[in-house]
Image 1 (tube, rainbow, N blue to C red):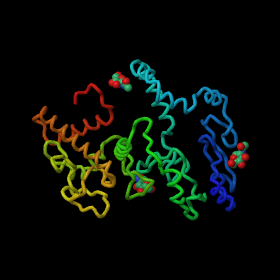
Image 2: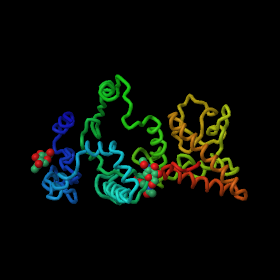
Image 3: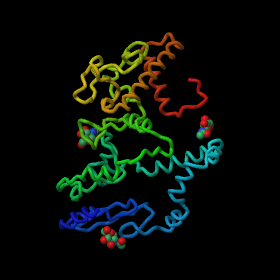
Image 4: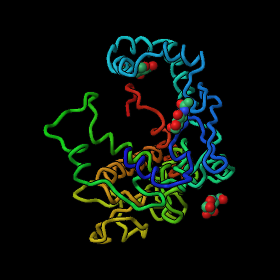
Length: 331
Ligand SMILES: *[C@@H]1O[C@H](CO)[C@@H](O)[C@H](O)[C@H]1NC(C)=O
Ligand SMILES: *[C@@H]1O[C@H](CO)[C@@H](O)[C@H](O)[C@H]1NC(C)=O
Ligand SMILES: *[C@@H]1O[C@H](CO)[C@@H](O)[C@H](O)[C@H]1NC(C)=O
């Protein structure tokens, strides 16, 4: 932070929005040469920097429990949650949570990486990642250097301050690395940074759970991965177990470290999944699941052809991703 201030004070006639003077999500508007104005509309605050709370903001801030109390409540008192889960309160609470969370994200989208003001592109051009906060104005010097010199932090300082662990501390919620990989595998069906357009862009135009990470995000790749028999995806057997097919067999390109030969590269829906074992592990599980569902469908519908078995199995898998598993399910 102090470096930022030093850099800012070095240049004259600096865009005052570089100081981020507007608080509480107020919008900074640059005018004249060195003036700014904060638009505090619907922030619940007013004043030159949107720092003075309105009466209602004061009251609701007072009533809202502290973060640590909310965390405690969410992770303890299981009898309260069992009670809520078993009654109408569950639906009421879910609706409240979903609407209040959704309201945190402006719709239509306001910003993207190229526009720090309201614009038509970020609403209509779905190849942009949209942003909730505006990007740093282009004419601001920052420690990382938007225009100025790039000055990355010392890796050793980062490692010793943030990453070094002296002893193993189990996660208090009982989660582990499997969950991190699951989340990464899951989000890569809609967070797909475009290799062609650059990091501000996504190649996922569906923005949803479409399992493009399993089936590929275009028809050509899907066909490369399909067996065209019984609705199944291509696979290879290794030591009696089912794994994704090789890149050599499918011609579906993958990003692997260059030292891995094509016969050992496994081809799955998302090109990046060869880079981390955890992602390939989940890709393998979903390949097996797709082919397992195909077997069941075929035995129940012996007249269905490959295309209908494939399409129906895909819909079933999309359903499996969207619904939490129910404990009484026999499958
Ligand atoms: C608003 O922010 C600017 C820049 O941080 C500061 O210089 C100024 O004193 C603030 N004004 C008020 C009224 O808080
Ligand atoms: C919540 O209720 C559903 C059924 O309505 C049940 O399947 C689930 O196990 C319950 N969850 C907990 C944590 O008790
Ligand atoms: C979205 O914007 C990018 C960058 O300007 C452009 O290359 C792309 O063609 C646009 N896409 C659409 C659908 O307009």
